Length: 232
Image (cartoon, rainbow, N blue to C red; front, side):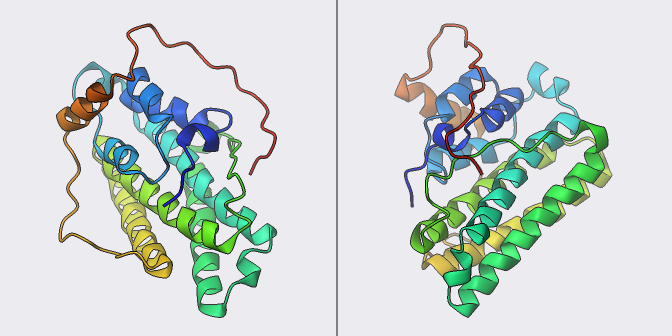
């Protein structure tokens, strides 16, 4: 698909901070090196947070802030491609696809910001590493972006407490799933390979993570935010 890692994309660490808040510091530290759109990252985000102390501390505001940052990611990705002229150079059917998805993602940002009000987070900095400037790279990365957001909504929607927000989140989830299928069709990838989406259980994801021996037992340190050389 592509070789853009979460750490490279997430220039000021906002997405990684959100993952740490939902899934824990160890999981976030491991996933920062994962490829955006890769199976491990998608499986980890699609898995609801484990029951227990961490989940009890989660609230709807924190979960929505987490989702907002990923909607910012998508909206910025499509907007940057438009401004770079990449979408304008596409053939009509493909340009319609890209513009439609971009408009949807910007609408998602607006809606979540309205729900959060003063608690809405500011747009983070992103580094797309030229993937918005090439039609082929843009198309491949679009698949990864849509799969990523579908996975995270699958994971966090069951953790929401408000029934109204659960309904709204499921509405976003179904739209994002359609986006992912449309993007895969445009990219020439099988839109729906299996009859059911089966999220990996937390225990299975933890076994995969543990088998890599990448997670250190030392307490994690806070990485200072840095100004990116190129941002979205």
